[in-house]
Image 1 (tube, rainbow, N blue to C red):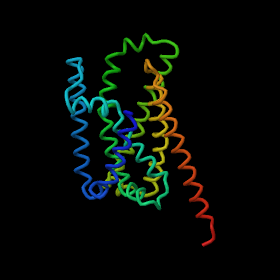
Image 2 (image 1 turned 120 degrees about the vertical axis):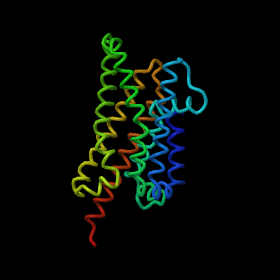
Image 3 (image 1 turned 90 degrees about the vertical axis):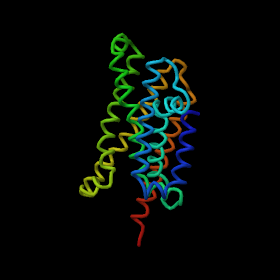
Image 4 (image 1 turned 180 degrees about the horizontal axis):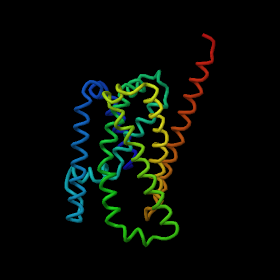
Length: 233
């Protein structure tokens, strides 16, 4: 539910506010930055008091810090590029796909930075890990760091002013790295589930279904595009 609800809410919000996001992207980036700052405050509060922050801060710690909010935006960006562009809803999302990508990157920053700080401060525990737990933790860490490294250039070049300074072919080549990023964030998320003490199989199943659905949609779209290109004019 913690993953599914943000996906549904973010999809509805993006469709309803697509015009505003397209006309006033800076406002949405600012709001995303505010959420990122508040998320960081909620985590600091938790670390100092060992209790969940009250009110909205507590919700942000649960939904935003754990990556569900940014993941929902990334899911939307993924599927916008894989679904039939003739559909009105998909057309709306495609018009704001770059903006949604930037929002997702801003929202994921507290998750990345604060988790790295926690990992560094817990190195003595990590060094004592063995066997399956060590392998999963290494996979979780490497996938997360690699995803962030791939995300940074994609994030920077999603801004219109930066994109306009690049050659079109260079920008398109760089954007193909997004596919690797998608694989890495799913690998990272799956390792998190497998590392959890209760191993939430429903969550693991949801990740698997989402990834499979994306691959099927992307393959189908590529097939249709190839067929259209080779059809007689």
